[in-house]
Amino acid sequence: MKKRLLILVLAASTMTGCEEFLDKTDPTATSFVEFFNTEEDLRRVVYSSYLDVFTNPGVHQTLFYMEDGKSDNAYSRVEGHHHQRIANGNINSNTQAFLYYYELQMKHLGRLNTFIANVDVPYVEDESVRTKYKGILEALRVWHYFKLSSRWGNVPFYLEPAGIADAVQPPTPKAEILNVLFPLADEIAGRLPEAEYTSDKYMFNRYSLKALAMRYALYDGRYELAARLAKEIMDSGNYSLYPNYEDLFQYEGASSNNEFIMHFDMSSHDNSATNSFRDLGPHFRTGNGESFVVPLKSLVDSYWTMQGNPIDNCPYHTMEEYELDPNLNRDPRYEASIMGHGDMFYGEQIDVYNTNNPMYYENQRASKSGYWFKKFVSETDVFRNGGNFDFGLLRYAEVLLTYAEAKIMMNDIDDLAKNCINQVRTRAGLDMSAADVTLPQYDAYTQEQWIELIRNERRIEFAGEGLRYDDILRWGIAESVLNQPALGHTRMVDGQKRTLKIEDRSFTSHNYLWPFHENSLKVEPGLIQNPGY
Image 1: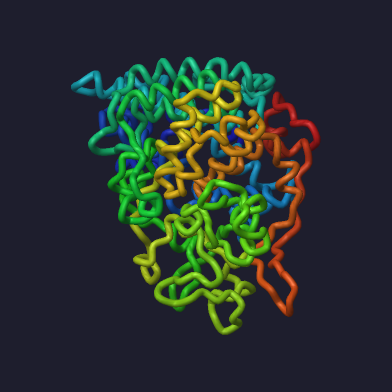
Image 2 (image 1 turned 90 degrees about the vertical axis):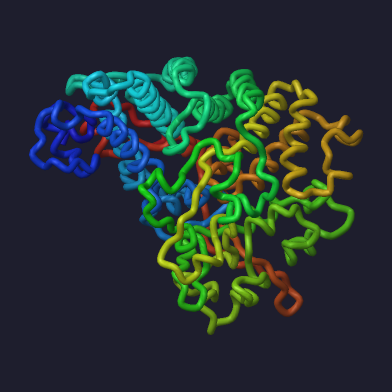
């Protein structure tokens, strides 16, 4: 038990246990050399390391588009997916989610440490192949530690296979871990190819690793580093915004764009079926939509107007008018990302209040909010058992908005930062005669106003893409937005405004860090429980 939880993937005792994980065809392999001795073994280890944690289209607990269910953007209806309880605050140190996520990360860190330590074992004809795969494995280890430390703060930190004695050692402070990870990521990136691979493009290359480091530099408030990395990626010329925002998340553009930097493509899971329609889509007629995670009113109301103004501060319509008609004079990203009551789907108008319709909001497989994500939901997949979507785990729009946010937070809002915002807004289809941030009215903006603008720009640009939970934690606003009830569609009934209510939510100051599960504390006595749990 201790070895499993301490992720000690050592020699023969581990090789049999990893047999299924690595899809090894020889069931009799017992020594490390038998298990890990060819170039194909190297590739298989890399592929499996992605699949088991980051690119499995069938695991709801880890699917990136399910992550919004942890935030004020969305509601996740199945408790076992873990997002629901984290969002509503019904958590403690015995909540299964925290054991699941911690063990998942630590198990794979142990495997990665062992494979990296033995990377010279497999035979390769071209040493550049070994260099590439070693760099990718090291980059995956960095990714794991970024995620682990962002959730728990101080955690065990090893860049080599651990031993039983390490279980009693105290965790390493988060700041010390990140002080190692950022320069390490830069060094690894320098050894990786500059361009995406012709095949297996989901694997890290130089700029996709820089983009990941950029994201976590922003998350940790290392704004100079985040801006520098974003500028390097922009200057590389490798990426650009796809011209049509809506098509980027449909089959029309998902596999043929130059915007995705970190890929969750078909080859990353051996071309197995993707399930985004089932997970996000409506239960239409005999279709397989499950409405597992659905948008909330909070997200719907966050879409600003075509002119780039909040809906509660617009001269054209009242707040109530916008609440009752979310499509009214709205940023086009709303219609591209969300659908709900009154909208058209598969040639029919959605009616979430019709008790005879499978989309009736109280039905089990329907949306309790009356809204659904349109991103990754294609009518092509309505009556299919699965799809073949390519997803972007990090895209060029994030690079542009990261540069802008970093410069805003340093109160150094240069022309490039404004241009980055304008690129994103222009592609979205806003009325740039009013939404262009180089217009004179923006000259009087305070830093606080710029912060409000860039935060909302991120929220609507990346809605349904799994970034919101990290954003509300790093901005320190979770205590505000996750102490509000989860609400849905609003309509007028007998002259009164009524809004669907799904659940109450709670978030306290200690929830910014997750607790270590009680089982983890027993097995690793060196762990120190985070305050408040």
